[in-house]
Length: 170
Image (cartoon, rainbow, N blue to C red; front, side, top):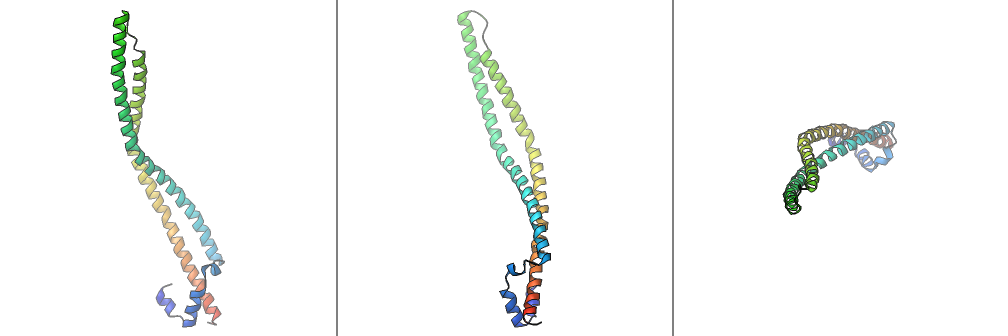
């Protein structure tokens, strides 16, 4: 109901309308039904919001994770040079073949770190797409909530006006 429609009512009805609280009219069956629908729609919206928040959190995590993985790879490469040099120096002292077991462990760590970095980089576009989809889903789940809230407010005004008119014999 618009302000103009309310102003068309007699003054006593307008004053009574303003006195009636929402809680007094929320027992109306149509309002009860709309509120139930709103609760369901709100639950769907919260679920969509959670999915979107998770995707955004992942997008915020990725740049830092990629940088850390790149640093880890550089650290491992630097350790490999030292491990190889140590193995070669030990070989010349003992006059037998070098023991590259330390380097072998570092190679395993390096491959694992490189694979992780590759996975992080490959996931960026996919996570962006999922975030866009989750944002759109959230937007779509918000629309019914807004419509239901508007319907509840409209119905409350109708019931309040009817009650105000009844109280004043109109």
